[in-house]
Image (cartoon, rainbow, N blue to C red; front, side):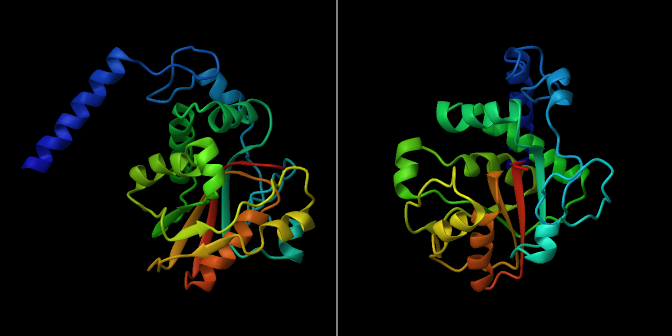
Amino acid sequence: MNMDIFKLTTRVFRALFKTVYPPRCTLCSSKGIDDHDLCLECFLALPWNREYCQQCALPLPDGSNDNAICGECLNRPPGFSQSLSLFRYEGEVVSLIHQLKFNEKLSISRLLGQMLADCIHINNVEIPDAIVPVPLSKKRLRQRGFNQSIEIARPVARRWDISLDTRSVKRTRDTQSQTGLDRKQRRKNIRGAFEIVRPLGVQHVAIIDDVVTTTSTVTELARVLKKAGVKRVDVWSIARAG
């Protein structure tokens, strides 16, 4: 009974909060849709990743097969099974992610996480046993004050009642920024950067990251997870660079 009262109170509070503080579009300040801080016009104008490689989410040309796999994944299969990425990394999406990461606008993580959770539902994605956000190094975490991948993962975990594991994997060193490095340099840079510090105890994990560029980071993290006994690893991200 107490739990039922708690749930009812929570719903009432949320409804009241939305009445007093209705959602406003992060991009243009117009009225938001549902409880999302984004208006319909801006929502439709975002660079949605509609046609993509089913394994790494690389954006593909219009008219590509729904089950298409890109040449890179065919020639060099990554260590993860499937990917889902909301957007192409361009336009307003770059601005949203930069505002979150570098201007500490944590409200954007809620918006992005909500949309990712919606996309999981629309695409009928198989729900994993646990979510593992890509860890930051201690130095980067001190500088930024938060891990954007964890903040994005929170609404997804709540929506789908998935365990959010932020303790089993740590970043062992502060790697050089991947920006400006080619694919080979990125793989070398990230090699050995993650370590399992306690058993995960699950078979299916989804890695969450904000932006996937060449897949070097998520491929290395997937390798470490599988070495620790995870059978299947998927990758969920907000944006995928082409």
